Image (cartoon, rainbow, N blue to C red):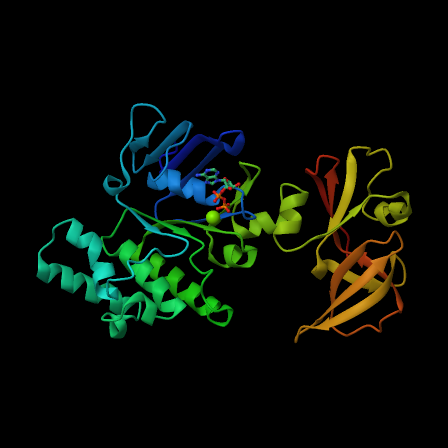
Length: 351
Ligand SMILES: Nc1ncnc2c1ncn2[C@@H]1O[C@H](COP(=O)(O)OP(=O)(O)O)[C@@H](O)[C@H]1O
Ligand SMILES: [Mg+2]
């Protein structure tokens, strides 16, 4: 165990019948850290959060929170209410017949705190989350954003050691998401709450996470800061999923282009080549592509083009490019992947 880890997830396995959902999940979380579990839907994110919360049990593995083994998939099992963990469920799971105040007060009532203290703590957290004016409303009378704040308030009012959140922004109007996201991040940082959040949204994950854990086929395929994951994706899947890399199957027609990156022809392990939209420059040589469309992005244009082999690529350009025109493009940075999709080389050339 590293001395700094606050939560340790050790070799977690979980199957439902023949369906293997988690297969050897290992990671740790430092105190005060914000970890985002990122993966397409159905990859086991909710299952993993439920195991950390104690709502379900793993078939194998261990969960340690603040030095205490809370589940060892055998004799040791500390139930959710004794784990000191706050949980914001995907659909918020607010009690519909209770007011916002009573929803938030619920965990404190369970702890049998005195009435005065409950009132003080609910009001304090409600002010912080800017829902103090709707405390007498029932969930159905609240907007999506307000419901989310009530759910967050209920999860953190008892000042848990650890906060779990399952896709907490999915019911929020996209126009409001960025500001709600920022406020939540600043709040959790100011309170010093250690958090683990699950999402399938890579942009959301990138903006919130101290570190990302990318879950794929039941395993974490990469753990790292958003910048590490973006700059050095561990494989083709991560490269495409985070930040949308163009990926092409390597063909002999690229050999003149690749020579500029000093890739030798005998490198047989390389099967795919990738490059990010922002690394492309239009040149008078390089990959030949026919422009299909140009999308205006304010500060730039996204050019969608088709290369000779038929594959569609995207890249950014300061100016639009006429559709049907032919361009030659050169990425300043390329990623090479093995036939299994592993990143084997990252190469750059000068502009
Ligand atoms: N109680 C259950 N019984 C059977 N299959 C389940 C159960 N819970 C989840 N699953 C399956 O496990 C897989 C992972 O689910 P989940 O953890 O909800 O993924 P995610 O949150 O990443 O979308 C899915 O295929 C889902 O259908
Ligand atoms: Mg889920």
